[in-house]
Each structure stands twice: as structure tokens, then as C-alpha cells.
Length: 452
Image (cartoon, rainbow, N blue to C red; front, side):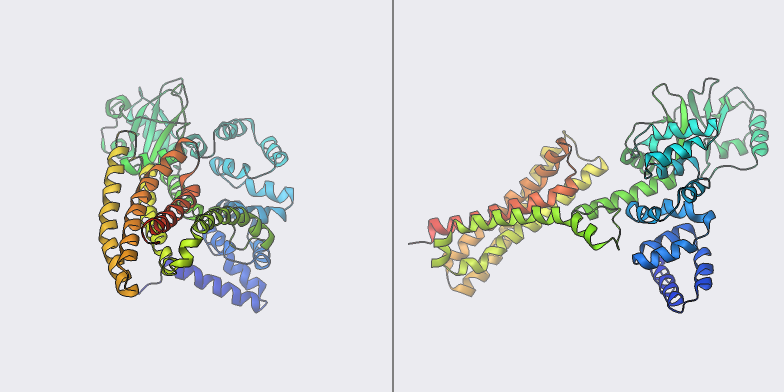
């Protein structure tokens, strides 16, 4: 059975570690520079700081810029700290303009200015165009290598023009048709260019109904367009409908990966660009705020429990069973929360269907609540031989799961309305609500119906 990509990467890391321990630096350098820049970046991110710095010095300068583009922001900053200004500028010379734009945004302003001053006027203007857009927008994603043709020329002229260029940009599946003022008119697919009569005009076979992507469209919306329409490349236009670049599928794949990592890491209060081997102090600082927030919510839950101290003193079994109610509500709420956040990310959830989703989730939670309430009540009765406690925990469980459904739908919607990332804050708020409501419902019902 062939090794997976992860296993291959781990093997390369193991091989390099063994080479370093054998002090064969030349062999390590040969092994390193035989890899693809993305593989080198992955290996650098997998190494502790000391070994990372050593191997980074061995990377071929011609590959340095591409490697820097592939590593996470935190890792890139640690590598740039040890580089001279001349080395950084040399690395940027090998980058394409769209990659260079992304790279420059992580540099100090002085280095940005030095890089721009060292470029010719045309490339500097094109680079400034990309830098003028937000990084997570279509304009920030786009490449400036779009090939344009006019509608009033023949296919033969286009073919001769392409032969004269000698090389096409990657992922070129279509050419973009513009007028003399660079206004976008439509697309000409390479397939139609190659399979139609060379004497035909571009206007005869171009597709004028293919809408361009506006430069200010968020990157997540761009990714959704590529997914829904199976695009390989797409034109990008400005407010005046002038063609200013194109977006390709490899750029969109980066967006999708970043979004997936962001969602996963945000739930723990971490950045998806975090360095696995960041310094201890820095890592501690990043996590301290999140831990402090969770501590506050834990104290809130503890305070609620303290309100029922008399009840717990008289019925010790409540302290044993209490976590069950909070845990079941938390899990049920997390299921709903995850579903809603995914719906928001995919654009499936809006004003028109929110009530329908809420009704559905509440019904699901109540149904599951009733089923598991019977199970928990039965177990509790056989455990403590007390029907009252069994009925009390059953009622509390149903109520908390109902509450968890309401919270799971409402929290991400409200957070999005206030411009807060639901993936980052949603789980903390949800856990607090289900814990507090669960403890209060269980202990409150026990105080009302079980105490003499």
C-alpha cells in the first residue's frame, strides 16, 4: 500500500533529523533543496526553532521567496527576523506579483517602500493595484497575468499572438475579451479557440454572459463561486467593469484550506497561522486570554451551584448527577451550533429560512431530550432508588436540551450581526449557557419538589 502524503512528510522529517544528528550538513542541504518549496515549508513548520533556523540557512536562495510564501505568518516572521534587508529583497525578486503582494503585507513599511522603489514603473503600478485591496478580497487574491484579446480580431490572430508569447500562465483555460478601454466583455475558452475555424471573429464564439467577479467581493464568496460553477479561472473587474486581473483555482484552494483551519483553531481561541514551535512565552500570552475567559464562565457556573448549597447538603445524589444535565445540553447545543456556522459559511442560512431551522432544531432537541430523559431517569431510579430524583433530572434534561437548541441557532446569528466571528466566540457562550441553565434547572427543580 502506498504511503500517504502525511507519512511521506513524516519520513522526510525523520530522514533530515537523522542527517542533522550525524552532522552531515552538506547531505542535509542536498536533501532539502531537492524538495518542492511547499514541502520545504511544511518541514520547516515541523521543526523546533533551533533546527528550523539551521535548515533555513541551507535553503537555496532561488527558492527562498517561494518557501516564505508557503509557511504560516508566525513561522515567516521568525525566519525574517534573522534575514538581512538585502536577503529579503533578493527573495522578493523571484516571486510573481500576486504572491509578492501577499508577502509584502507581512513586512515592515520601510521594506515595502524599498521593494517598490526597486521595481520598474509598470510593475510597481500593478503591484500597488493589488495592495490597494483587502487581503481577503477578490482583488487581494487576484493575479495580474490575465491574457486579454479584442472581440474584433480573428481566431487566427489570437493563435499567432499566443505563439508569439511562447508561454501561457498556469491554469489558463480561457482568455478574457475586452474593448480598447479594457472594459470586460466576456470570455473565450481555449477549447473553442482550438476547435473553431481560424477565420472566425472572437465576437462570433465568445461567451458574453459570463459575469466577472468584483474586486471587493470577499474571498469566501469567491471560493463559493468557484465551487458552485466548477471554475478554473475567473476575471476580476473594478467598479467601472474594467478587467484588472484574474483568480485561479489554486488561490481559491488556499482560501478553503485557511477557512477550514480557522474554524478548527478558533474554537480553541488559537490563530490558524500559529507556529507549532513558537516560543513558550509567546504561546502562553496567546492562550492566556482565552483561558481567562473560560475561567470567568466557570466561576459563573460555580456561583449558580452555590445558590443551591442547602439543597446539595441534603441530597448528595444531586452533586453526582448534576454534570449529566450540563454535558448533554452542551453536546446537543454544539451539534446545532456547528450546523448553523456551517450553513452561514456556505451561504445556506438567511432571514427567510432561520425560523424554519430554529423550529426543526428545537423539535430535534425535544425529541432527543425525551428519549434520553427516559433513559437517564431509569438509570437514576435504579441507582438511587428514588423516583423523585429520576423525574427531576428527566425534566431538567429536556428543558436544557430545548434551551441548547435555541442557543445553538441564536448565538451564531447574533454574533454575525455584531461582526463577531461565531467560530471564535460561539462555543464559549454556548457552554456557559448550557452549564448555567442545566445547573439551575436541575437544582432549582430539586429545591422546589424534593426538599421537605
